Amino acid sequence: MISKKAIISKNAKIGKGTIIWHNTQVRENTEIGEYCIIGKDCYIDKNVKIGNKVKIQNSSNIYSGTIIQDEVFIGPNVNITNDKFPRATNIDGSLKKEGDWTLENVLIEKGSSIGASSTITPGITIHQFAMVGSGSVVTKDIPKYGLVVGNPARLAGYICRCGKKLSHTINKKIYKCKYCGLLINLDK
Image (cartoon, rainbow, N blue to C red; front, top):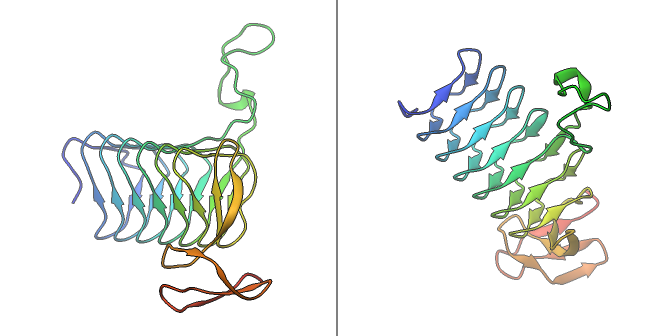
């Protein structure tokens, strides 16, 4: 279901079963996979790639060059940026155009979660099943299963696929989740 109040480019590709709520804009050459939920008032820029079963909450902004893999959760009011050195004008005072700056991609790997009101800075990779705490500003890559919090975001531990913090180690690289029993090997 796509709301009649959503603005979807004719050049965007939307997979089956995907729901897009009102006042969301999806720009040209963007691909959104199957069975996603895109909340209201979101902005999804051109050339964004979104996998299957992704949930993007209300009022999030996903800018050009972002790649979001399958089963990722993006909380409300998240901003994923793409310009490390933003300026409105060039040195000569002319208004910057598309070719006047360097786009830096963001990659959010499978199963990761980004908490509400977080900002992801350009050139970042958030590896599989990582979690970003609400309100964090991510300025560095996050390891697999890493839990980061703060401004700037810092590693605060590791997280299970079930979403709970890992605390029981078998050794330095293998954890056993006390909630669901899953073994997490940080090397694999």
